[in-house]
Image (cartoon, rainbow, N blue to C red; front, top):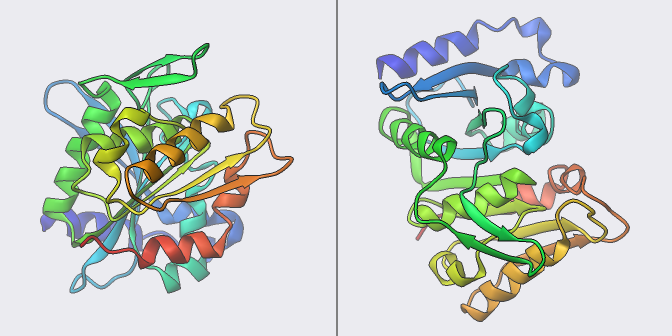
Length: 258
């Protein structure tokens, strides 16, 4: 509770005059998780309201490869700031965690055969994912998180990371929104109970839309009914549409773990 109060105060000290459309990223607080063994994960956190008596949904946002580094800022470039608008903070108050993956590392730990178009999830998580798992566990324990409303979303490298983490911790999530990513279709049954809405651009030259389509087909064969939006005439930047879609945001926050 002491850590929670400290973080809440740090967020409230942000000057109200700086809060406008162009300064939404300033509503996030830059923080750092250390595992005590030399492992460090930078992250930004959005606090929903100055009301410690309530429990809030937790949203995990995973950025793409271009935002890796150690500035603890770049991960807010795309998508994450959507959760910090006046409208969404009013309608869907939530704790949002946006970690930053270090340079040259990945959220996922998988074998990707590009020629065959197949993905195999490895048994152990990547180091950044291992630290993120620890951070989420710490957040659930120490912050006023509603355990029935934990959501995950990510774009590109973060889309792969979204599938990766849901397959490693399927008991955590009430909803999943992978954007222009892909996953291990052989593991689809492990996440079939998680409501999932997948987004991709039909002309994506970086991550083939077939990877998302294959995951959607595998989830259907596992007995679930995922959403799938494939934008025509759109390349890799499908997240511009996905994170500005009010129907997706409303759908995600409506989900509760049974």
